[in-house]
View 1: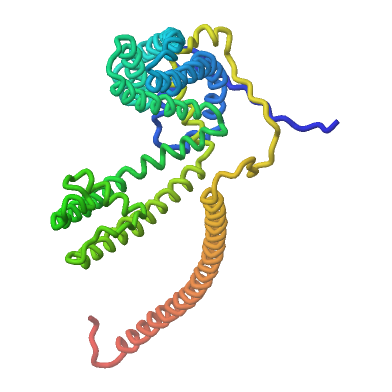
View 2: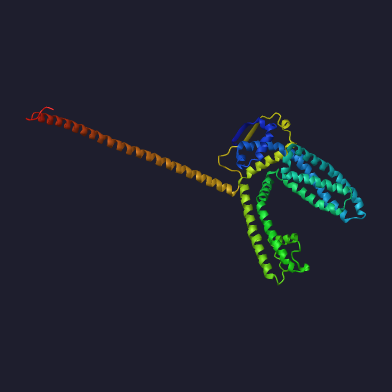
Amino acid sequence: MHLKRLDIKAIEFDWIFNKDASQFITALSKWRNIEVFSLDIIKWVILFCWQSFKNYILYFLFLPYLAYFILFIMYATYFNKKKTDDENQSWEYFGIANSLWMILLLPFIFYFAFLEFRQLLLQKNSYYNNFWNLVDMSSIILNSLIILFDLINVEERTIVLLFAWAVLLMWLKLFYFGRIFFVTASGIRMIIDISWDMRYFLLILVFTITGFGNSFMILARNYDTKDMFTGNNYWRSFLYSYRQALGDFDTDAYIETDEYYLYALWFLNTMVTLIIFLNLLIAIMGDTFDRVQEHAENNMLRELAIMMVENEFLFNRSRIFKDAKYIIVAQEEKTSGTKDNWEGKMKYLKNVMDKNVYLQSKSLEKLRNTIQTKTDDKMEQIKLVIETFFTSHLTECNSKYQDLKNHMQGRYRIITIKSWNRPGFKDC
């Protein structure tokens, strides 16, 4: 049997099990610096709490929604089509099944409406800041209206229009549950981040397409109504310019009188929108992909924190964590610097660059210390030589000065004595 070393840690984090933890998780979900999720203690706390949250989300949200989704899709796609196509005797037998299907859908609508109401009471104004909450509320309202209109026999055309939007919202909700599973969470986060990074680009693109569409609409005034390629309204002109931006190069309707103007405008439109803008969009998507992959694990942890905040109303911490006090983490011991998964080429390059910069900084620091040490030693030697030189010379100069002083004092006395004994001189 092959034995492996384990790294076991115990975290005394008992307050994370009570109601105060919701504020902590909420603060983490709104934290802008994604690097905070790379801390081991943050990672372990989120993963520990997520184990319980995931079960509640699966059993109280995901599985009921799957049943609700299947029932509504069959009601909208199969039964409603049968009702529209067969207005004869065959519908008499289908009418019973249709009514039964509506009865089955009503408990699910009431159940999810109750959950949304609880979430609204808990989150208050912040409820409306979440995109998925707006999707849920819109879906419940639309589905309720469809069943109501079907019961009171509203015009089928109106119900079909509502069905189209209601089904789209039901499918969109599946993306929300894709965030639960690790294999799909990164893809959902990628779509959300790319859509968010594209917001200003899309605004500029819409302005550009609208401008070209306006020009095409004005040039189309020289055409007969039956030959008009854009239509005499802004919406059809916008669609014509939009199709050109996506590669629709149909120019058969251009007449010879304005042919050069139309082709010049067509060429400019395809050059700007199709070549420049769409390649710029690819570059934006590539940058977002690298950024998300660089922090793939941290983004996943933040996504889990966001889902826990969104579904806090399902969870009773006091009951689930009643006897909990410690978080025990046991994992296989690893050498430092190893990685289990690939986190993006930018992450790898960043690690390599950081390592090289660190090594260069250490080398420069070592070189600076060596130069400083040698310089200090050399300065000490020069200082010692200078001090020795000046000390010896000063001593020698001082000795000579004393000798000169003594010599001058002795010579002054002799001169004085000789002058004193000369005839004709008086005592001073």
